[in-house]
Length: 192
Image (tube, rainbow, N blue to C red; front, side, top):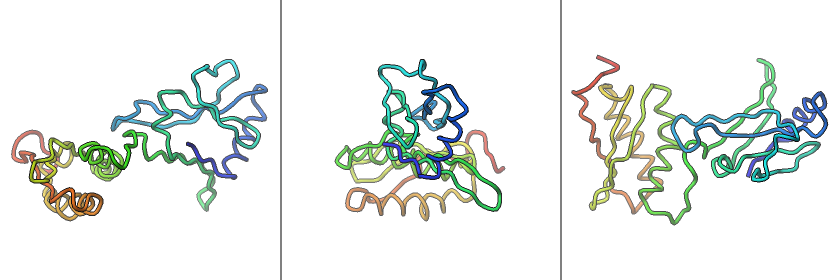
């Protein structure tokens, strides 16, 4: 479920030496499965471990994950990196915003997963997001843009050169294209 690099394991073991004996680390997701999902790591004293928690043994400590966070931490990676700026702990959880779906799940579920895990994180840097409204019988994914994307002059480029290319590559033979359902002339606009 969670991969913790050797460097991160050594870092956690060093930190835990200064804590109460038997203290674990807890890895969790706040607001799992939403665009507001955030991951974190904290100390978890022995008396804070629940019966329903998932426990993973590492070198000198255990990582504890609550039952609700567990499916959203599939393929999560924790690393401890040092560069010229110093050292930092990194936590990558590609499934935190959307629960990973099976390869044979219905197309609409797989498209929604791709939007939440790949596309919206890219759009978020510009204050935007996109939602799938439907997949037409003809095989077009109809998207509704919001936030900073509404009224943006580059939305056509984002749609055709970014999102559509990604989706057609991922869902070759299943999708024929992507359409924009957003009324860019209405609502609050970020750019004009």
